[in-house]
Length: 84
Image (cartoon, rainbow, N blue to C red; front, side, top):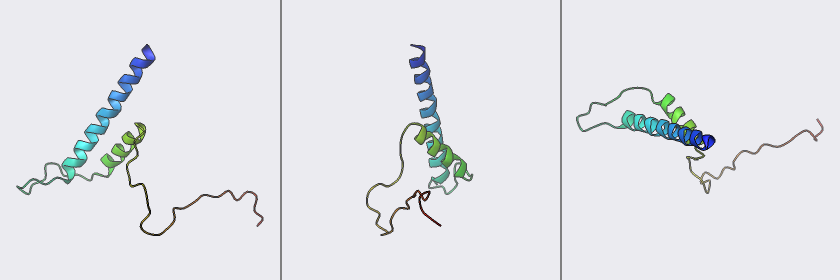
């Protein structure tokens, strides 16, 4: 029972951090009609926190599907059996 309660608390903390970082990212890019930004900072750090929190929840953000650029995704090969 204690493990389940710890898991719930952990999930609540992760979701809270996700919501917080999403709100800060939104505010950093949103410019109201008055023209004055609400917050003015470099959002790079907050974006990394947002990405890490989504990954910790098992979410994947990004495009999936066809690669319209025509380039193939890089592959990692095992070269231990090749002779040099």
